[in-house]
Image 1 (cartoon, rainbow, N blue to C red):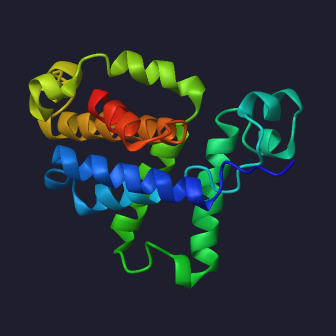
Image 2: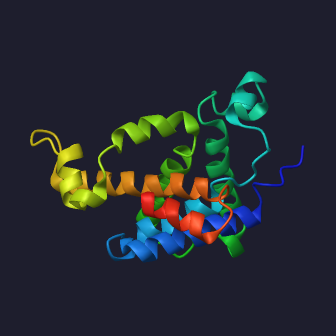
Image 3: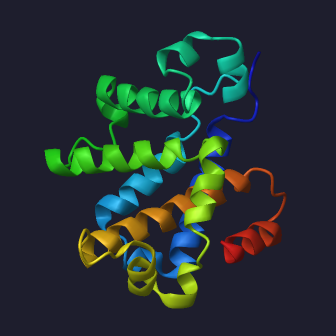
Length: 193
């Protein structure tokens, strides 16, 4: 089966919508360069190599990808693995080539986490954690309410976790992007996120 949806046009559309959102909301001012790069890499690669059938199909049929990734986020795991394998094999597309090793590891971890959370099995768990709107309180207040426990977690770590939730919400936003037909629809969804 040829998948005519999960192609480079979808990746470009997702990337463009993500950039509009990041710029319009001012997120560009508080994301680190590494976080921004990870978001952009996740946007472009989140469906790379998609076979046109969903995780449920892969698991039910015990396809090679389902077996390789143990029936958990099988396509998302494949997308991330394939993206990093391609970058390793081809210098001309290695978006991480000029980064320090620590930054490469950080981008890789963020991309894997973000792409994994496009699995709809994770969607509802994430939404439950993200039920409080960060925009009502601001990042630090959201982090404090959502994550800070004086005995176990520092506020810097809580802020990092809050950023992860917000960037994950972006991932779900750009996954919705493909079903929206015009800019007004996209803007409406972006504003709701």
